[in-house]
Length: 255
Image (cartoon, rainbow, N blue to C red; front, side):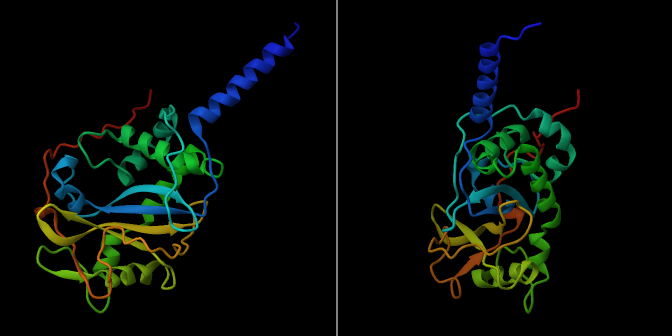
C-alpha cells in the first residue's frame, strides 16, 4: 500500500503544531518557586469562598521564574486535556495539591496552574513530570511544623501574637539550608493596617528536585519594608471566613 507522502507530512505537521499550542510555549527559566499558601489568611478574604477548615499551608504551585526572581507566564492561553495525568496521580495529587475555593474544582485549579505556570517549564518538565514533582515536594514540605519547632521561640498560629518576618524566614532556612534565600509574602485587608503572613516561596532547581537559593530581590511581596523590625500576624483558622465546609474538590475517576 502506497502512502501519500504529502498527506503524511501534513499529519505530522498538524500533530507537532497541536502539541505546541496545547502543551507549551516553553521559555528559558532560572529556577522554580514552590509557593505554599497559609490557608487561614487565604480564607480571611471572603471573596475566596474558602472551603477547607484547616490550619495549615497548602501548595499553591510550582512557578518557573527568571534570575531576578520574577515569575514567568502565562505560557499558554488554552488549557490542554490533562485528564490522563490527573487519573494517574489522582490520589496523591488531591492530597497534596487541592483547590482551596469552592468555586474551583481540583481539575480547574490544576488546569490553571499548568496553563499559567507549569507550561513555561515544559521543555524540562512535561505535564506528568511536573505534577509528579508537585506531589514529591508537597509530601516532604511541612512548613507548619518547621515553624513550630523554631528556636529559640516557636512560631505557632495565634490571633494575638506577632512575629518578625526574619524569624519566620530563619526557621524555614534552618530546615532547607541556612544559606538559602527564600521569599515571604503578606496580605493586608481593607480597614486593617496589620500585615498577615500569606505565602512562602521556596526555590528549587530547574527540575524541581533540589533546594536552591532564591535570587536577591527588591520586591517586598506585600510585606513591611524592614523585615527585622516590623511584625506580622500568623493567624488561626478562627479568624478566617469559611463559606462552605463541604469540599467540592472531586477527583478525576478511573474509567
